[in-house]
Amino acid sequence: MDQIRAILTAEEIVEQTDPRYKKESQVWSAHKDLHPQFLARPANTASLCGLLKALNETDLHFNVRGGGCGSASARDVLITMTAFSDFEFHKGETENDAYAIVGAGLLWRDVDQKMEELAPGYVLTSSTLQLISARCPYLGVSGSTLQGGLSWLSSEHGLSSDPSNLLDVEIALMDGTLKWASSDPELLWALRGGGGRFGVVTRFKFRARKYAEKGLEAIRGQTNTMMTAVIIPEITEEIIHRAFKWYDEALIREPKLNAGTLVLIEVMHKAAFQSVERNATGWPRPRGGHVLQLGSGALYRESTPEIHALAVDTLAKGAKEILQQYDAGDCMPRDFEEFHDASQIFGENAAKMVEIKRRVDPKNRLAGAYSL
Ligand SMILES: Cc1cc2nc3c(=O)[nH]c(=O)nc-3n(C[C@H](O)[C@H](O)[C@H](O)COP(=O)(O)OP(=O)(O)OC[C@H]3O[C@@H](n4cnc5c(N)ncnc54)[C@H](O)[C@@H]3O)c2cc1C
Image 1 (cartoon, rainbow, N blue to C red):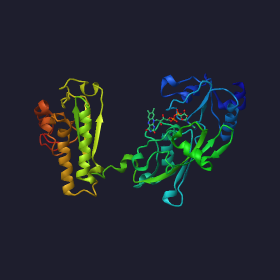
Image 2 (cartoon, helix red, strand yellow):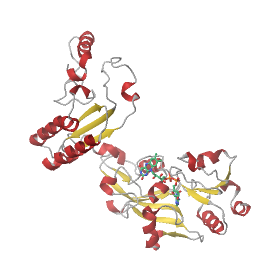
Image 3 (cartoon, helix red, strand yellow):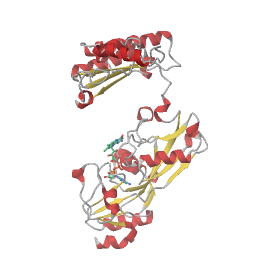
Image 4 (tube, helix red, strand yellow):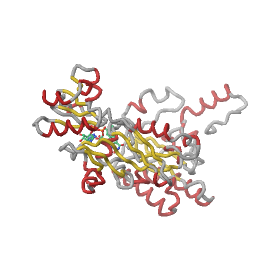
């Protein structure tokens, strides 16, 4: 252990008493914390390579940590990569050449911020450049990419470790050498989803893609999506089966409905809908506890009056088909399409709601989302 301490500078050693120790060794799953004897925080690649070479000659237990969400820990030495925080953005000659070099110690939220800073103007126009990253901003770039990398854009562009997204990786090997893994195609192949067992990655080279707009903004306002959310008492196998049958059949009837057709089943805790008495608020709380959310519709630019009517019809029938015992009063008061009936949703409170509306808006001027 002393031998390893000796090859690092004082600044590169984080002892258990150091205020940085907790932050840079924190795991996601408590039982995986091995309480490392100290953290090695190499300041640069030369120091990292020297450290690996020295560790290779010992029987110490060590590991490397990116963002800590994968609960990387070690009994003896945990290498923390936070000093590897460099970021470069290269726009390239053509749109397809854009790429970013991302330091292995960064979290995805740091990368998002740097992308915004280094691609100025894009946010204000209709397009911005994004990497195919993971979905949670606090994940480390390293662990999430090396272990596969499922991103919000994966349905369109695959995983972040795919060859089309992860172009190359700079890696320090156990013999103390440093290389770009593209010089060893087998190694690069293994790193794409094979995890961090082959060496310590110092930098990633990711392709950057032009994306229509920022994140979900890209689909905002582009689709004739209609929604309904029904509160249901239990989620059964039959409900799940019928929900996906409903989805598949809708797309067979009209493939263009794929843009806005969705099934979202949310498993909730009891407290979500039963936190107060049923009539404690204007909307009488439903008796169920989970959410079946359905959507249907085509892209605005592809929709015709016929397709739109089909989407409305599909959605109006959806909950009835899926639940079989459907009560229109179990819908949440947040989606109002032509088939929703506010008087049923507000049930026994509907008359009082009308009375209050008359008192505070006697001319009935403010439209709101529904009429009663
Ligand atoms: C709440 C939560 C949400 C998640 N969401 C997603 C998601 O949306 N998409 C997704 O794809 N995954 C997701 N995951 C899984 C996540 O990708 C893994 O937990 C991943 O290991 C996190 O990476 P990290 O760098 O934060 O973890 P760490 O614990 O730091 O690292 C995990 C492992 O990666 C390796 N490693 C780390 N850094 C390096 C390096 N520089 N060089 C070589 N190997 C290294 C080590 O083997 C280490 O044991 C989620 C996990 C959690 C807990």
